Length: 309
Image (cartoon, rainbow, N blue to C red):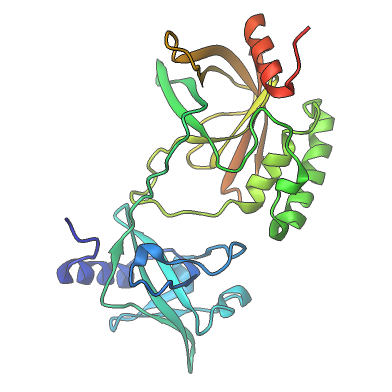
């Protein structure tokens, strides 16, 4: 099995790259499960977000020490804590674990002997619902991206405020107040229920380093009913634009020996695009513009648990 750690020569190349380049890094406090396995290291609390440091905010010495230049108060709170430092080297995601140390000139990070490649976690997808979004790209009409439900988000069910974790409730409420006002002005508010998961997603989304920089990822589905569906992703990954119409293929499993899947074909217009304060994450509210009556009935009954009359 191939080692996830860089060789000595690779480490030297990366160190020189950090010294020479204007390389941004992200720093996240972690807690060690004492298993000795880096893959078991997790964020200290669910409310802790990675802090992005620009290249000009760090100074890398040839001895393998990173000096933090004018660190913010949030970074200072990491003093004497174990952190995970992540960055890209020629589009390859790398990380190492170290401690934020206090020195005479301020705060510093010692780059350890072991620098590791980031490995993407394999997400087990529940095959109960998925969507394919089709769009044109360079005059090709068959380009599509797969979309899957995001864990712990209600689909075809009424979103409730109790779903919002307590630590992000205040931020979620701030987003909701702002977005409701704007949606009412544009006449796109509807019931407004779709904005609860939108605001929750933007409040709790955390920047995640990839094994390979800028690789296309499936969209998350965070809301769906018989009128709208909401997709979410990072800003760099999202290709859906406000006012544009897209073809949608919705896939539902069917418990039948004859038919294994029900496919619903629709078109949807993006009536609202919402982003977080840093414009790193985005949610796209898509309203169905064409849908067969039998499919409207199916989605209505699935959402309301009532018969369509």
